Amino acid sequence: MFRDSVRRCLSLLPLKLRLRWALLVALSTLSAGAELLGAAAIFSTIAMLERPATISRRWTDLVAAVAAHSPVHVQTMTAALAIVALILLAKNALIAVMLVLRGGVMADSMDAAFQRIAARILSVPYAVHLRVHSSELLTQATLAVDVAYRIVLASAVSVIAETLVVLAVTVVIVAVAPLGATIAIAMLAVLLAALAMTTRTATLGWGRDAFESQRSLLADLQSIAGGIEEIKVFGSEPYFLDRARATHRRFTRSLRQHVIALPMPRVIIETTFVILALGIAAAMSGSSGTALLPLFALFAYAGFRMIPAMNRIAYHIDEMRHGRRAVEQLTEGIMAEPAAPSAVPASLQPPFAGAIEANALTYRHPNATTDSLRGISFIIRRGESIGLVGATGAGKTTLLRLLAGILEPGGGLLAIAGVPLRLGRAGAPLRIGYVPQSIFLLDDTLRRNIAFGIPDEESDYRRGARAVSLAQLDDLVAALPGGLENAIGERGGRLSGGERQRLAMARALYHDPEILLLDEPTTALDAATEARLTAALEAVRGSKTLVIAAHHPSAIRWCDRFMILEEGRLRWSERVPIRAAGI
Image (cartoon, rainbow, N blue to C red):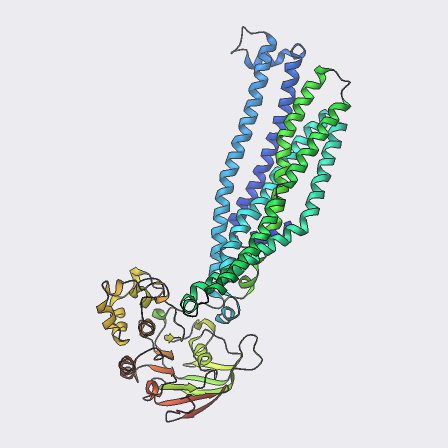
């Protein structure tokens, strides 16, 4: 399980970052070596302090220039203490370097993983977004990344480092007291393994419950934020509050259990070590005090280093298990979906010259049992204005999304100017403007909503002014204090429904598209504004290919022909089919 968690975390990182994590493991080995030298040096120094007369005069050469008039054993002890201090200082300096490097590689890894996930969210086919909840995408790009690298992968490196420290100190104390130390270390190792096995299932379950409840809580809060108007109108605050509270309670319940269990291994390990140390002391009670003093000093140092290290091993193992669900989420869901080709920016697409052709075109929505479009065929000539009508659920929006290149046909052929329209419109020779029924607006200025996705330095003022004029937005821009630089609020909350509709129209017209697809463009407009917008569309009639889905006959009365969709099948009419439009 641990190997799989590490593999999943590293799979999203470039080679350079993987090597930096490997460097941390290498430095951990050096740190363990320094720990071994430190433990050996401490034991030797205590022995010197206890029996200075037995120390060789060779040590005096190390400090003769500094302490020429001191007794031989004082010089020797001074040198030994200096060596111990240098070893400990070097070890601590190495640990400080490791901490700095770990913080850097952890932050860079989180950034790299976030970029991979965010890029995949933007690149997968639109159909994937129709079946994946947005809260899953948000938790995958934020919570899962944070837990995977800040906790799980960092904990894996810490387990390796602390294990090496324990092994290094073990080598020294086993060399000094083979039998007692071997028994003590073996019992502690068995205890640690038993604790890990005992808590495994519970910790995995708590981690899974905590992650899933956090994702559900995010979905609940999204519902509250997105539906606050309706919630207040219908007085539904208690219902949504209770639902969010129940989800949060589920999260805190699993978190509470984990927080209680997390420090328990430390208490058990420390208690066991004290008992073992007393047992070893009792077993060696017949030895002389001179022999016991260095041994006790060594075991004291071992306890000082090994017990915290073993506690941290148990802690990090528990954290890795608790974060297992986040690591799984990191590489599942959206990351398991194939990416669609990137769309060619409208400004880089060549002019459209040719007809829109469909032959036996079919489409079925995910998890649906019947086709939304059933083998329809048609030809729309360049510059033609087509009214698309049909009852609710007839397939109008589906057809427009296929024409926009954000859905992929389930069967048949859809081509523009003789070029098959592939997902993302990659390589297709066209410029398309699209106004969907559900309009997304940035919490930003009018200008940035119209230019939509174009950096400020590349934004064309004349294009924006022309789009504003064609979409009948001049009166709104003139009435706002900041004009095009005026902020419109979250989801366009400072605009009326008609103003949001016209803003979406301006966005579609900004690139001067060759093909303009409109899904119910006049639904939220009053009669006067609808008339002005219809006049604007009539003004570009012939110069652009228009496909307009509408229920209001006044919005499409002037079109050249009418496509009628009925239960996924297509027929044509030369007049406004009022009955088919659902009016």
